[in-house]
Amino acid sequence: MVALLASGYAPVYPCHVSPRDMRTHPIGTGPFKFIEFKPNERITVARNADYWKKGRPLLDGIEYRIIPNRSTAVLAFIAGQFDMTFPYEVSIPLLKDIQTQAPNAICDLAPGNASTNLIVNRDKPPFDNPEIRRAMMLSLDRKAFIDILAEGQGDIGGAMQPPPAGIWGIPPELLKTVPGYDPDVGNNRAQARAIMEKLGYGPDNRLKLTVSARNIPIFRDPAIILIDQLKEIYVDGTLDPVETANWFPKVARKDYQIGQNNTGSGVDDPDQQFYENYACGSERNYTGYCNPELEKQFVQQSTEANQEKRRQLVWEIDKKLQEDGARPIIYHFRAATCWQPQLKGLTIMVNSQYNGWRMEDWWLDR
Image (cartoon, rainbow, N blue to C red):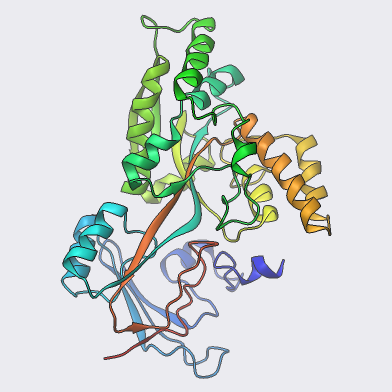
């Protein structure tokens, strides 16, 4: 509980302020106060003189410039227009550009405890058929995603963040026993095609579907690869790019067939991961997966005082989630954060991309 409260996913704000007002003029107890939000232009915050920690923050304010195109944003950083990039947003190819064109910049490539995953609407035919879901799960070539999108900089794992950055992730030797995780992709896809053929699909009767994805590169690019891979098992997908403001409401109300999603976690802890993303009725359980018996094991692992026994329970739960295709994990991505030498006091986290951004200890050496 203490770790969850300390995470970036646990802001403190007044309950009497409506969600509508919080979206456009947030109020909280952080080191900075909201000043202005201009859609598609910038967000501005200023030092909170009433912040509870004396002498903090050190900065007078921060301006977040909104640049939709990631390459354009990186070029602006290279030109010295910004003190830092958006956290965990620099891809591997763009990182190389920064290192070549701005050699004085400091960059940190790290796992952010975030996974690229496949979400399937279990309430919509034909995806209410577990065999269809299993075939899609078997079609995934996880290594290809990592090689194409991140030049090998990524990790294959289950729901929990993979080791060594994650302390609860399934070990590789156990993960390989899960359907779809066998490195023999050809054999996996042969099994998938056999399932599809049994259900009446084939070269002359292909399943047509829409693949929804948030319309930003980190969602959209993997979705294109997913569509290409699904073709191997008689599935033809059409990309449905969804604007950010509409993405989370869309998946929350299950207004999709299948989707390419990214899931970030507040902390590297099974309580956060299992209850938030896989518990029956959880608002963030976008696929509607519900297994009351497995949920009893959520409680069991949470109350286990022996950490090694707890780890074994966590592995069993995670393995079951992957076998059930609850939210098939494609891979856990790594991304870079870069900053100019004058920015001081910054520490990049490996347990969550949301942590470490209070910025209360940051300062500029100018």
